[in-house]
Amino acid sequence: MGLLNTTNLKSLIEIIPHNTIVTAKWLQQNGVSRQLLLKYKQGNWFEKLTNGVFVKIGDNADLDGAIYALQRQLNLSIHIGGISALNNYYGITHNISYSDKNTQLFGFRSEKLPKWFKTLYGINTQLNCTTFLPKDIGLVEIQTGDFKIKVSTLERAVLEMLYLVPEKIMPNEAYQIIELLITVKPKEFQLLLEKCSSVKVKRLFLYLAELSDHSWFKRLDLSKIDLGKGVREITKGGKHNSKYNIIIGNVKNI
Picture 1 (tube, rainbow, N blue to C red):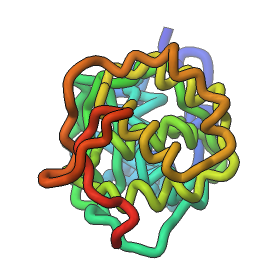
Picture 2 (cartoon, rainbow, N blue to C red):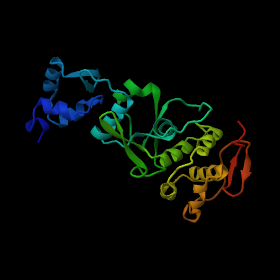
Picture 3 (cartoon, one colour):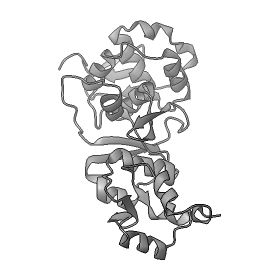
Picture 4 (cartoon, rainbow, N blue to C red):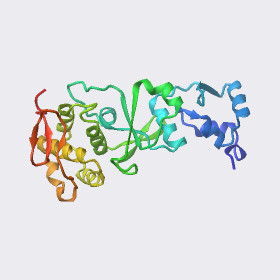
């Protein structure tokens, strides 16, 4: 039964949070036909932003409002993660400018951004589709305005950041971030590292965390973390670290 069979337009408007994108697909799924949607536009209830998406009149949807639509209306796992989540939601910043200023989004393999998202927000965002972490762990809901979106936990965001080393983030930039991680949840890192399928990410994280000499590092059980076989080259021309079997340059040399 469509939404409009049980309620009226006013109730429909009220359940849509302010400053969020409203997709035509979601409206149609909830009983709003194209003809009815046209009437709502003509009646100044909705404003069209581009093909297939709207906002309530008077609203201004930013990136968070678009992420809300991806997650709640289109059921995608796409979320803000990596260094963008660390900077924006956890206040973890450093004194050097990392290489890529785009907001880093992470989604599961085969997920794609809708055309409307690319049109409105694509110039400032970058989607990384991966399977190196399960899509159902290491996420938390945060309040933004009068709605919530899922973002990476601090711990997941760290591993997502390392996933982009060295292509988009330099090893010394990642090291400076990890140096700042005074308060973390070792159990959360433990779970994520055990579920992580990227040998590079796991080895690089353990190397940088140990180098940072954080007290929480000692609470990790490395015997339960599969570090795979064979060498992993992080930095061309770097030195070999035998403990974690990686080739990496001097991350303290900025």
